[in-house]
Image 1 (tube, one colour):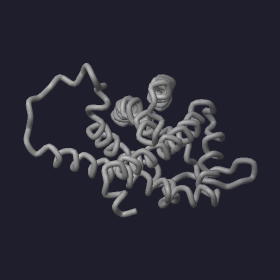
Image 2 (cartoon, one colour; image 1 turned 180 degrees about the vertical axis):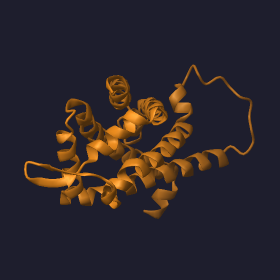
Image 3 (cartoon, one colour; image 1 turned 60 degrees about the horizontal axis):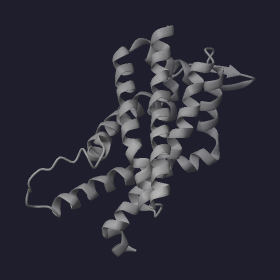
Image 4 (cartoon, helix red, strand yellow; image 1 turned 90 degrees about the vertical axis):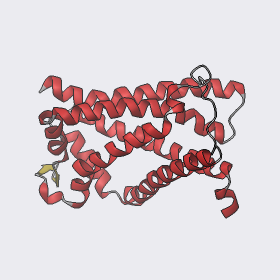
Amino acid sequence: MSRFLRASIGQKFIMSVSGLFLVMFLAVHLIVNLLLIFDDTGELYNVAAHFMATNPVIGVVEPLLGLGFLVHIIWSFILEYNNWKARPVKYAKKDKSATSSWASRNMLVLGGIILVFLVIHIINFYWIMRFNPHLMESVTIDGVHMEDSYTLVADKFKNFIVYDIIYIVSAILLGFHLSHGFWSAFHTLGWNNSNWINRLQVVSKVYAVVIAVGFSIIPLYFLIKF
């Protein structure tokens, strides 16, 4: 196993599996976050946030999710370092734009920017919701007492336009990252014949647009309506 992980194919396999795990998380996260714009009372989002915070299954999945992010980030730097080490002598630069996408040539940069946003996002929302709930207001919905997560999130989007801009830009960059990473992960896992690759590239682009537009709509909604 250790030899497999040290090998290039093993490292790419870990990147692919962890990446696909995060792709599923993003889909769930977007669905929950879109509740912010479908109910201005905040009840739908608060119920969903309360469920995510109290459900024992989610409690098990969350550490795995954190581990998935950590593994994906660490392995991306390991792969980049190994690629750099394999080419110690600089060679004449070639125009790669005709054979590869902009996203594929800048995956590490895109990932780094997304990581910075993720840290900001965790500090503003997740850290407070999970570890400092006393900083939040409380509400009662259908007899259940819970934290008012909706107000925490909505107030941030309503009152901090700089954060809204950062959120939108990060969502767009995430879309670019996914447009290559999604189908590339399946390619690494063996779905690499021409028919499947063409289909997966289309699915990747559609998924990337859905994620980028979906997350961007949320701050735009609060900026325009409020």
